[in-house]
Image (cartoon, rainbow, N blue to C red):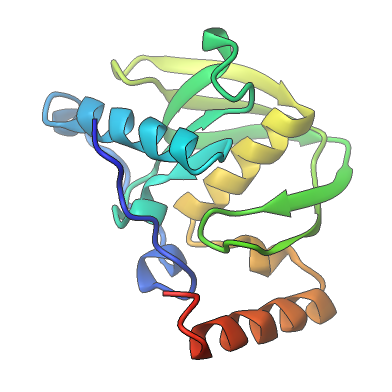
Length: 173
């Protein structure tokens, strides 16, 4: 396993729609990428990590909101689709591509979703609370949307100001 470099905003790969993973890719190195993404996510103490965050413009992410405690809640999500969402939650959100920036973001409370697993099989799941928030956040990454886009205008401007300051001091690559 290898740790991958995490891209920071405003890297262009974070701002474009990822390409769907095609059937050939399932046999050609996808499992290694997924394994490395899990390793990178756990090392960075995140609960989700999308391929664009590691420089791969693909519709793929990994998530484990149990922090590695419950293997049944560890997901490799390929070509995610949101089938239905319901309710709302308003809570703190962060992002590995925005180190040190946390803010309250409104998301749906539950999400019924469809995706392919690492073997290419279609799965359908219903996620709630933190898992729903994580799935929706990471799907946004696959769509070229960053959590800055989900903030109020005031919070977005404050976050951008903080990022500019960190970039000037060399603390943000």
